Length: 437
Image (tube, rainbow, N blue to C red; front, top):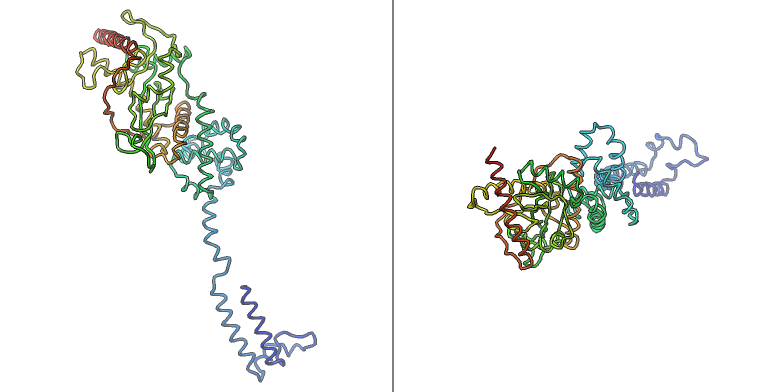
C-alpha cells in the first residue's frame, strides 16, 4: 500500500479518537469486544465514524488509482529488458547452450546473420585474439568483445547505435572496436595475408590462373577501390573521382579471391598508379626483395611470376596491363587483353565480397586515425572466410574504372621495356596456341 495513504489513515484515526473517544477504532486491551464491533460504530450517536469512513474511502480510491512507484518504473525496466538481449549473460547462453541445440547449418546461419561468419570461424578469431585482449585488462569477456566488434563491422553500426544496443557508452564501443581491429590488422595479418613465395603455393596459384586465362605464370591480380568515409569534413585530396570523401584501398588477390597483399596509404583523390608506387609491394618488387623462383621460357623470354592490372597501372616486368582499353590492337593483342581482364576479374569479385560481407566499408564511420586498421582488419576477416569457404554474400559493385594510363617514371623505364617485350611474347604465344586448337 502507498506510504502516504498509510500516513493519512493514521492521522484520521487519531482525529477520530479525539472527536469521539467512546467509539475508538483501535481497541484498547481493556475494551470489550462489543465496543469495537462494526455495529457499535454504526449505532454511535456521533457523526465522526461515518465521517471517518467517508474520508477513508475517498483516500483509498485515490491511492488505488495512482500509479505506484513500482509501476512507474516499468518503462525503464522494459528498456533494460530489451538491452538484456545483448548482455553478457544472453551472449553466454547463445554461445554455450542455444548454439549446440541447433543443427550445424542453422547454427552457422544464425551466427553469420549476427556476426558475419560461422561459429567455427568465430571461435578461431577469438582463440587467436584472446591472449592479446587479455593484456588490455578489458572488463568484458574476450569473445563478447569480439562479437560486439564483428556485429559492427558486418552491419555497419555506428558507435552510438551499438552503445544503445549494448547499454554501454559510445566511447567504450569505439575503444573496443579500435582495440580489436588493431589486433586483427597487426597480429593476424602476417598469418592470413601472405605473398605466395613458397614453391607449392606458387605452383597452385599459377596453374589455377592458367586454367582460367590460358596465360602462364600469372600469380595475382591487383586493383584499387575507394572506401567511403562517413560525414567527415576533410581536405579536397580525400574526394575520390566519384564525388565523395574516401581513402584508397589497394589489394592483390589470388584465384580463390584471397588477398595476398593489402595497402591503405592514400586519400581518395590518389590514382591507382600513384598509390601502387607508394606501397611496400612496389618497393619490394622493384628492389628485387621478392624473387619468385618459378621461371618459364616463352619465345626466348624468361618469364617470372607476374600480376595483372587494368590500364590505370603502369606496365612493368612484374605487372602486365592490357594493350588497349577499347580493342584497337591486333588480333593477338586483343585476345591477350581479354584473357588478362578475365584474370583480373577475380580481384574485382574479391573487393565486391569484402564490401558485401563487411558493410561498414560501404560507409566507414570510424575516426580518421583508425580508418586504415579497420579496412585491413576487414581484409583479414575476408581471407579467413574465404579460406574456410564461407558462403559468399551478394557482392558490392563499385563504379566502372575510368582513369587514364599513367606515365612511365624514369626509374621504371627498364622494367617498362622488359614488360613490353614480355607482354608481346605472351600475346603471340597465346594466339598461336589457341588458333591451332
